[in-house]
Image (cartoon, rainbow, N blue to C red; front, side):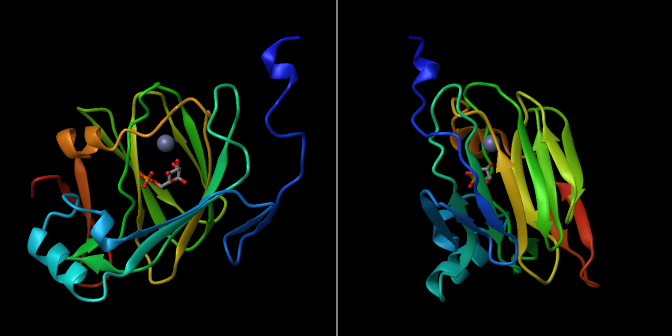
Length: 192
Ligand code: M6P
Ligand code: ZN
């Protein structure tokens, strides 16, 4: 019998509470605080001050029970809280897939952006409820909350893709999303 005939999880329905970002049944849950985002914001001083303060939760990731294994299609719901650090909007760490495979995001609530970078070219996709963002193979990806409410999205990705965070620390993401004086999004060069 081929291995895919004995799946680690059975066929199932999941319920998604878009207002709370909850999945049922639910798998692992991840909470990332400001102190988990070292080296990512432009202003190291602002980042340190936030860590030394209340070290706020920046985002939470709720996963389905589908495991990150080859041939599986795990799902997760990420909620990025509103806010900024040194004028830069709250964002995810961002990662590259060590096994270059695509990924799909579906905006659920709030306003955000999907920043992608292939090492040379950055791309920005405005995200909101009902927007599907497509991440092609080989593009690192980071999500940003550009609004005043929590920004929430569903992700579906190949279970063998993996998460390489070192790639982003080494190569950057091409652009930074800063909050303008009127609250608007200002995209600036990564070192700007
Ligand atoms: C989405 C998916 C996850 C990812 C999460 C948080 O839900 O892309 O695979 O873990 O966002 O992003 P990061 O891993 O960059 O912190
Ligand atoms: Zn990914």
